[in-house]
Image (cartoon, rainbow, N blue to C red):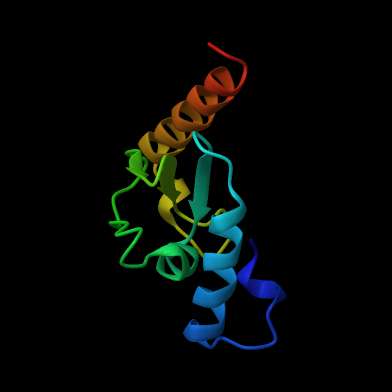
Length: 100
């Protein structure tokens, strides 16, 4: 889900699109939300996602994880600890996706 693909920054349109995508996700999926705008679009009454970095949040059988957006505008990844934590979260998701 890429908010940049929208011709509008209207949060209502973004939320509607995010709700449609979330409804298509299979149970036990893990979704990484990259950036605050995407987190905001996917947060709803049914998915009360908190802006907690990396920590998994489970709602409706889906695991949601939030990471800073990897664009050059975000300075979060200048911190080596953040790079390490993001790498660990992604590696964990990869292992889990392979049945480990």
